[in-house]
Image (cartoon, rainbow, N blue to C red; front, top):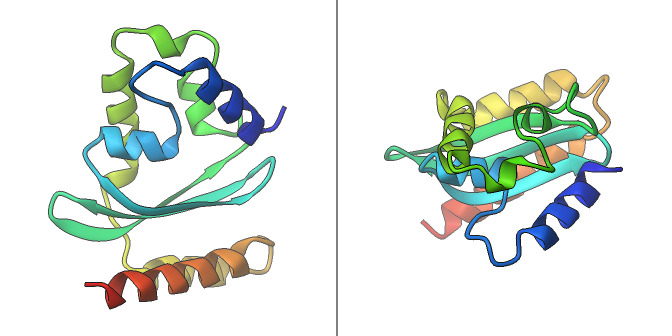
Length: 141
């Protein structure tokens, strides 16, 4: 089952709960304001987000996969049982903070996508999205 399908099921099962679980929600639980978030890929791929965190604006990124071995979020949170745990919000925040330790500049993110372009078929699309998002964000500031 694909990660996006698992998220759809989880979202459906969480109707009435005050939180949903995903990388984006982990960033938000950690105190970041997610300005924009995008995933690239299907069964596996990468995600990137423009965030405001502790007075700074920057980029965070990560990867996802289709199993708990290749996806950090799935490894940390059990899709079937973790939603009802009392400490889930704190665990979600702690997980999100691990991505927010070092915000990246636009140049750093684009440099990484350029370096990965030989083997990552989503790098070009991700770099395009980052450039467009950066331009849009800066134009409204």
